[in-house]
Image 1: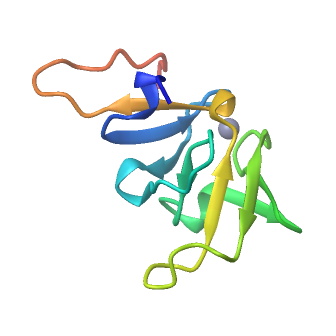
Image 2: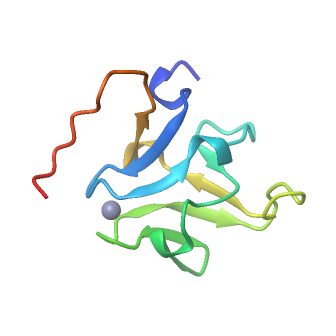
Length: 102
Ligand SMILES: [Zn+2]
């Protein structure tokens, strides 16, 4: 708690490669000091080996996935290391400065 960067609404991007991974709408409070999600934006965004979750773009280790998430949702619980993702907030009128040249 106390990390305001992780309490807003928006999209969580991979901190290494800026790939969108999780949405704040799929975030839930599971009593851990780590961002917890019940779904990914796109299953192609991540790679899961055993229960380890990696960014499917730059292969950074993100955290782990467990099968005890909300059963009314996906039943998955993605427990993500907050050092590996950054929240890109949806704000009104203020454009996020994207660091890509593409
Ligand atoms: Zn990445």
